Amino acid sequence: MLTFLKNHPFAVQSFFESSLVLTFSVPKEELQDLIPDCLELDVFKNKYAFIAVAMVQTKGLRPKRFPKFMGNDFFLIGFRIFVTYTNNKGKRLRGLYIIKSETNKKKMEYLGNIFTHYNYTTTDINHYNKHHTKEISSVKSNFKIELDTSENDDIPLPEGSPFKNWKEARRFAGPLPFTFTYNDKTKEVLIIEGVRQNWKPKPVKINTYHVNFLETLKLNNLVLANAFIIENIQYYWKKGRKELWN
Image 1 (tube, rainbow, N blue to C red):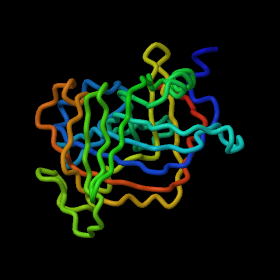
Image 2 (cartoon, rainbow, N blue to C red; image 1 turned 180 degrees about the vertical axis):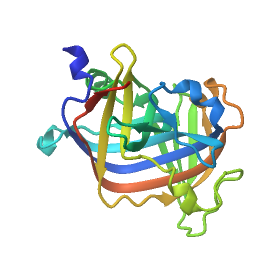
Image 3 (spheres, rainbow, N blue to C red; image 1 turned 180 degrees about the horizontal axis):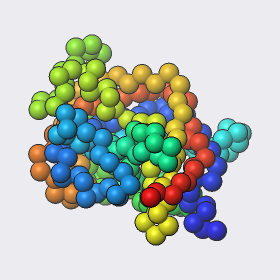
Image 4 (cartoon, rainbow, N blue to C red; image 1 turned 90 degrees about the horizontal axis):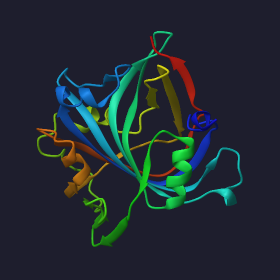
């Protein structure tokens, strides 16, 4: 019963007030051991793989078709690897594999760990706005990100990015259509499809960042490849579906 509950047994909807995603490039060999055998790294130029830090302010998160007053507002942080999965029909799906999840409320940790495999933990989340900058930080998780909020249409790619332009970089801006979980004991892949409307990520400039979790992974040559933000978007996740991986 508990296993069934963790497999996203119903659709969930929310409103994203904002979603800030920083995507880092890494030589593909360094991420290979962090994903299960059923998945493949989604690579660029057959050289770079990508890991993203997504920070999402949700509003009214609830089972789909439940009334708004039953929703809850949470701040979510997800550490995700860009991957592909070839399903039993031979179709190649692009998506994300989550390696760590955090939230600002115990209620989300409790419910998230009943209905998903994302292993949520609770942390402090602090927001600070000042002239043309915004800071998101956590003392417990030891991270701090400062972004430039000034209106600027000529934002350069981060220094050292493998992309030539923002059009190339947009291909590796989350979230992607699918998220995958793998049960090694049953050899089952859980596929969760996200549905969004008017998804138009805007490039943002990151002034400074420190993300302790990324440092614990001991990755060499980790480079900020892009950063995008979206605001005021309706979003929902379909009920999870499983298939055996051979």
